[in-house]
Length: 237
Ligand code: C5P
Image 1 (spheres, rainbow, N blue to C red):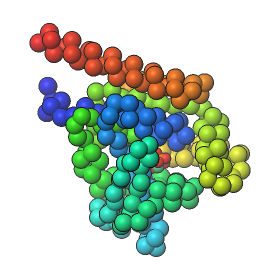
Image 2: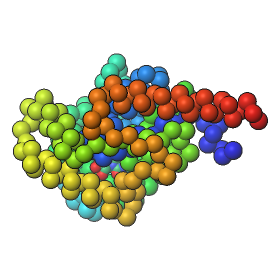
Image 3: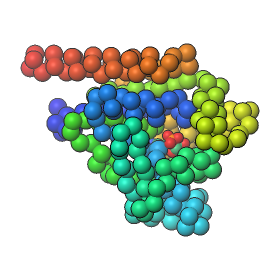
């Protein structure tokens, strides 16, 4: 047994932007009473901080230095999580289209990923963790108990994103949104470090034709199944 298995259980949720993984990770964590790691928010925070400091997001060393000393706080209260950067509430600011684009640029730097690795692992605490983000099951928590790869068609994801932005009063062109999502997918899939791909032992869920409730039910049944399996394994030892 690896040393990790004595640690709190982890469920990783991986998938492209707009697959619903953010909402579903939050719902799953609430249902199980687990902690939540929104790793994308960390890359978004690096992007926001770099942008505020006037640093070129392509300058790996400088961006990694920002990532290593990032002063962030996640305050979970009720259904929402308030994200603070240097004490300031940036919950909405990190979700803009500009920061989304920049986050995927800073996330491609190996030194930035390295700088954030331990910070992400520190989220693993009892009774358990739901970890949301593309390299959660492959790099950050390779020993996670349940790994889920959540996907949906680019059009379905663009539509969901459009609604989200509309609710926030941001107007965007639908065709541009589909093109942006496809470009970001390609950048994330083809990059050398931590590309977006399902872990070998991941369960793949396609949510294109599923409601949030249906996806949540499917996830919970995988978690319950895995708990049953591990209890059976322990009994037979
Ligand atoms: O998941 P979210 O859209 O908030 O992530 C923002 C960006 O951060 C992604 O486009 C991706 O490039 C990057 N990211 C990453 N690894 C993670 C989480 C996010 O590279 N674990």
